[in-house]
Length: 354
Image (cartoon, rainbow, N blue to C red; front, side, top):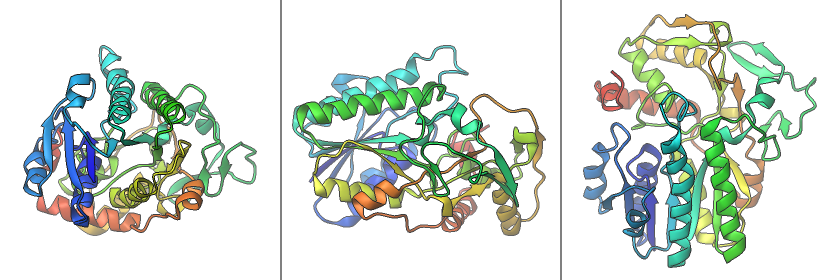
């Protein structure tokens, strides 16, 4: 079976490629990447050594996407994943081109060659206003909504499900991914093609390029170990803001199930480590201190645009539809990142952090 992964030299794409090859079941993997993400070029040789075909191309260019040729399945893992993308730069066009136009190019190629399609989406499609308006309790070292008082569609102690509000504002990044979801679902309905939309929680693990806005788990641990300046931003500088956590190998097990089924189901699925994987920045600092000793964390009490105190995705729909649940705990994810940080003291520089 021929698999095409767009964005295959990024953290998630590379992990998925590794997993397909490791199965030794006749998967032929081709990755396409423009290598714009700092550090992504370091994965080219690693992938080629295990037999993956690499194409230097841009998802925004139709002719480049077509270079993948005949494949049986296309996975779009090429998104610009920062919630601040398109806001801090001078123009927002590159964000929209990559995340929306790129997704259109990718799903159109899948249609043309008769392939199935997977879109990797994000928890950031959910309403910032709805999430920020939840009454938060400070429970030990993390925030948690006051579930007893909240009467909000799609919210439960398991997290937020797919019925939670996606009303603006969701950031330009979130809007680009939500629009891509809609277009890809329409391709599925119009052409009776298998399309799967996986709204991922925070993906993290060894080999992730660590930046504060993209790859917070890897950034925080690498910065803590190497005594780089880090700080709790917003929410009175408490460090209690928290997220769920998912390792790409758990995501791969779901993607493989979906590919093998071939059934038509273009509903978006939340895919995350769930409430059991919840970790705050304060907890991460405590874990790192036990691992490497104390390091001072600064404070910037003022909130930033788009910051939210708590996001946990409820993956119940996914678990019921695909008999899937994550197997790798957040603590194991942190241990893997820490081992990688010990072995790669220059990782923040590789990741473009100066």
